[in-house]
Image 1 (cartoon, one colour):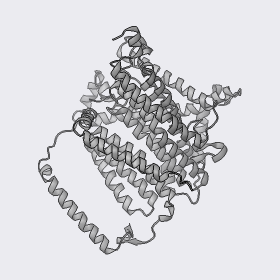
Image 2 (cartoon, rainbow over the protein chains, first blue to last red):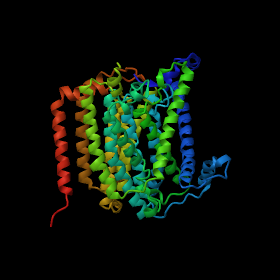
Image 3 (cartoon, rainbow over the protein chains, first blue to last red):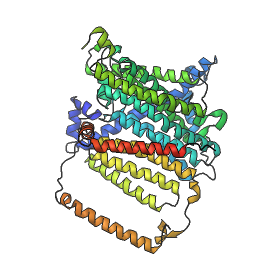
Image 4 (spheres, rainbow over the protein chains, first blue to last red):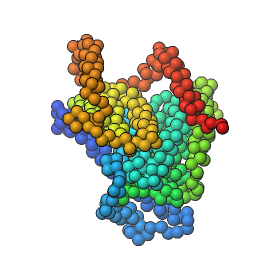
Length: 372
Length: 177
């Protein structure tokens, strides 16, 4: 059975009041609950995406010994709102020979793919839209819409720069999907299920129970996953699709105003989602350390805070990497994927399977300290 | 109710995009509408309780096949394939003459009747079983079926895929002059 936000709320008494209110129309009630929480999560993540642009500037400024945005609001924190207003009020320019239909569709596809992944992101044990049985698989599948959006955006602009950026983006995203998926498969095998509920539930307790410390292969799998995920989100050092110094701005060269904003927002939210997935798969997810017991509502709040903290720390690492490493060349990008990451990921998968058989599914900590 | 509405929307998306694939005159647009059809089919699977198949559908077709098709169309000059001629009430691009349309209609009719014959027993015993939001997991049963009962077909298809991979590598190999 799937745990959803509706089935979580149904255990509280106030939900009975709504059930009586919607007597005979329970499906409408569950639709409304989904709608409200979808709006909450999308609004929250859009804000995080917006603040991501601010964080990116501020951290890059810090790394390069500058000050960064400091005019709008305290410490310039309202800069992203100013940017948003600017983007909305800007003229929506479309190249004359662009493919109109695809030009309009591409940013929407990008944003849809990213927002659809939020449906299974486990913010806490209760605050998650749906704990699908095929959660991780669904997430990998639906996020491939982003690659399609990048590609179509590049094609539809009818400009050489956009075209090259779009082709690079699509080929890069497809290639790096393979090591990422195989690394996730290793974790799926350790957890014995594809739902985030199962995966996070297996990592309760001390950090030694996290899957990253489960065995040496899983430890390597985390870095393979993280590198591949960076490439899938087109972040530096893998930002070839939008390489400023070669392709002006890559696949969104011809986009202006809010359509460009959609691409930028999709990228920043996708980074957040990818960090969240890394946290849920490898870094213990939203579990409280030491199995501390709380009442239900404080528990949810603490779990949410822990998940967000871990995710935002990883977000910081992603930005840090971007402003530290130089960009790769295309041939280096492909050789990293096909000659290094994919074989390592397959080796990890076999290694994890062997470990499960040989040590009966016990982690290193269990073997050393004699756990369960 | 909720599930029925979603099923209806998915079916509508599937059929409408399939029609759009045929009607549009730009081959790139055709590919994108095909995407809508494939997503609609995934929606049908999901509402019928086959969650794993639905996710696989999106994974394989949206993430792989459609992008591959777009690449192929683009690299072979897809933009120049915009069909100018029209036929059949000015709707469909002229991919044939009246004989090919008549033949297509005949084949479609035969196919439809055969399908109805096959589905007859099912259609007569439609149980209006109420759908719930609680889907049981299909992953376990699928895994067991693939590895235990249909392991031969599974292995043979993997050999086929390996053959395709090797063939592609040989075709794409740089030639020595």
